[in-house]
Image (cartoon, rainbow, N blue to C red; front, top):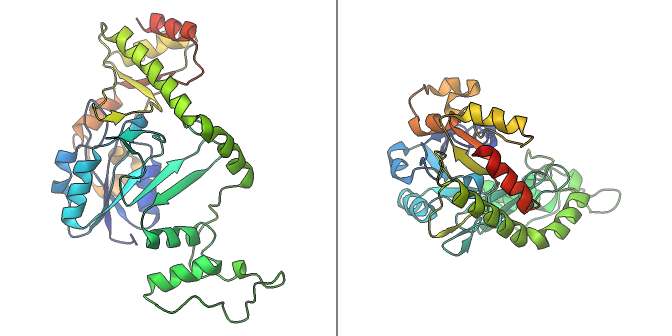
Length: 321
């Protein structure tokens, strides 16, 4: 497990929850700058940040663009580190033909309503090919209780005995195992109603992602003659465009023009994580992550959701130009 004093390498150009998860368990996020074209972690700068305290690398498939996972996994294997994919914005994406979320030791997905696959409230998913991590995750999501809680407790304390019911617990309606707790966990179970919604919507995710790619391709073609920088995609990546993010030195002027035209926009992300007040104690300063800082002053997103009509896409393009 990752805990007090451990370090996890990640990117500063992402939503706060990425680093927050590291800090929440007592770890320290160690930031590595990103590529200017894909916005993903710069793999050439990872190894210089590895120390004896480093326990994992957490790449983010930002905006639905896949990080360079082969290089990341090679570095992780060399230094005996876990790879945790933050795939919250990239469900359905592919890297060299492989599904995002299957490329590291463990991956996390978000089902927040604005995601490509969203429920009606908060929701998420952990996937892993590691049996030990799976046992611990199952226990922690439900207050560290019950049979999964005891399995995780035994695992974390190197106890090899078979799981036994706690003394006095007989798993009856009067004395259920769920009231016997072995770890300090969370209430992070997906509500049944949210799961039901996702079971219906997941059947459409490939179609929705394909539509997002179609819209992105139209934007790319229409805007290549402008001064705007369109998002880059590696040849071996199939992106899902959670966001279609442009770069411009005249961002504020463009945003104001689009606002007047009734076109929704967003800035992702205005403050890189290494410059957030809550991480002042880590000692970062302006200039430490020049690419992330550059992007924070130039990036903005325009609509790319799958329900966009051709007329709406053409209208958006006309107002940007």
